[in-house]
Image 1 (tube, rainbow, N blue to C red):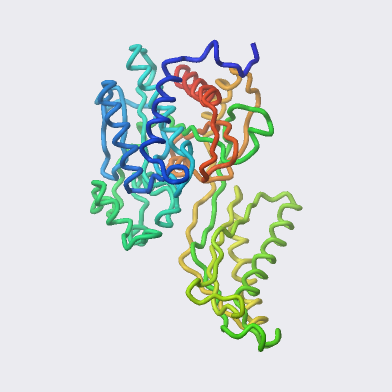
Image 2: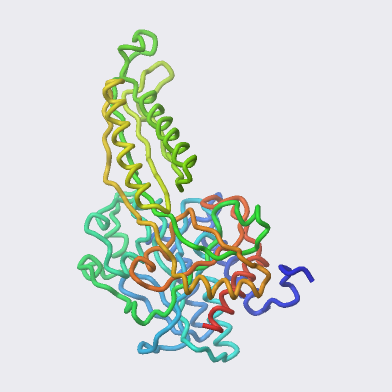
Length: 424
């Protein structure tokens, strides 16, 4: 038997329950393309209510914290230490079904199996379904996990929805969160009782596909700096009447900035640095733009990610420095919204070692890699909770309807997690 062929050894209880959950939640939250589970919104609510109803059917204990996150366990035991497993329930608009959800389902099916088979474990297991990890809806990311640890600011809570006249505070209130306590920086989890937090997540890149690994253990998580909206303000004019030396063209100025940052990216990589840059939003005003009009304004986002805090700090300085140079050369002005930062996270070496020992039992020797994307695990790690992550192979990237996680790969990840829990 191939070492990755789990068909004869996999636990059909976990597999069948997982397939049912994935299919049912996909159907409940489907959009014209992919799925949409809006942070503190309708799709996320539907998915959470589905799990709550299923947990009731299976005889699991359900607790909703004051941030509107949901925690599942075998029984109401608030005094013992425990292993916490979970991830987020929301998605980007018209995204894939597995980003976030896979980590909640992994813990949920293990918990259901423990209840179903009356399995005794060294530590109680709890599974958390976190709200609002994605930044696509309100700007800040990891909202549910930040709220748990009293890390949401008033500025975060006043962040506005991407499409609606709705603040994050109002959205949280609509889902039953106690916003008064949240904005007072109250901590809702006793982190000293969490012996380990493990997040299973689909890999959002191509490395596991390239390595032919069904799963791997994560070594660390890149931090990031983000500007959701940078405005480049120039002067509009007729495309045929103004020569280059008199133009104040917002598009040419902005593209020059991106090109210069790409040159810095290349230099940092050539010297062994870890960095990725993205400008995922880039547009002129559609009420004014025209083929024969020099654009007077352009709006774009900018994001840098790295495992090295000094690299992120340097990029922030380089971005501002290049803006000043281009402003002088092209007669434009750059305006920045508030900077959003997420520090790189180091995962717990002891947890990594234990997860690797479990992975080795499934033929995954030295299957390790860093995470380029941010995750709720970073927040738990930063707050001193011993934290680890498992990646599961996923084709076609992430944040799109084409996410393709195969159930056999998911079961490898679940099996690693089960072995870790069993031998903790």
